[in-house]
Length: 352
Ligand SMILES: [Mg+2]
Figure 1 (cartoon, protein in one colour):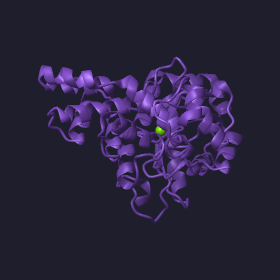
Figure 2 (figure 1 turned 180 degrees about the vertical axis):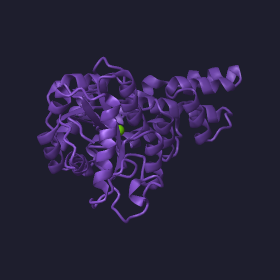
Figure 3 (figure 1 turned 90 degrees about the vertical axis):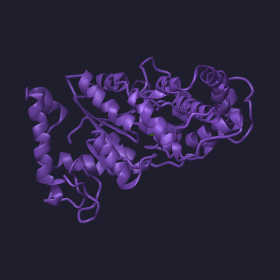
Figure 4 (figure 1 turned 45 degrees about the vertical axis):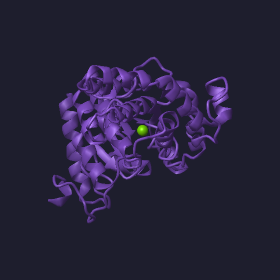
């Protein structure tokens, strides 16, 4: 995979948010309604799509809790599957509730207070000082912010290797102020034009606008977008459909809610070009492709008029050349898995 720009998601890729955003989802619902969903249910909402924004996920999960109290007889998996069938997100969650009789449905939506949920979420996540700075006013609850508990996943060496070779940008659903805090902690220095946050006018992932916008700013022809959710992979796929001038690769990392073999299979099914154990496997993964005998630099792309489909074939042939000599499997279906280690994809070339 020869790319000239690398775009990174923040949550679950650069920093671990299991004890920050995900904890805030669970506890903000609990503080507002005195009951909450299981922590493991968060991933079911993420997988349904349309819940990249954790405030919206909190809204969707609160709707499920309130509807269950009012007699909705659906498991979380059934509820989120129904959301996925309706296109994902909060609107789809509301549409699923149409199966409740009308007085009940109205009671649920009347109790559903997304302004209060959002304020409590922000208070828990940011803590009092940052809440006053970023949100203004006094927080509704005072507790040390969960934002302080976000372990860094990306090593300094990884970021240095990426920035020395590629244009590097960030595409995140975080508000700009919260993106800055994470980027500072990680040590990734970016200019404003190299990042797109919730504060930008572009619609959120999986809409392709942010990713295509960054590709345009970088003047990139081939873009790798690395994320931890299926919506991230869909973002790259949507960009590919929208922007016929460029090639977009969606790469998944197993450091968010999708883990292990099950997580890898979900990424593969969603069309991920590769699945990495974590972001620190990315530089080697990309360099193996670059060193695999097919020189596809941005300059080369500009000088030649190779049809797009041929370029893809070139990529595929370079993969096949490389996998036999690699320590890591670099087949797109199971990149990052050591050769000889199970489990590799059943369709992986290295099993041949
Ligand atoms: Mg993420």
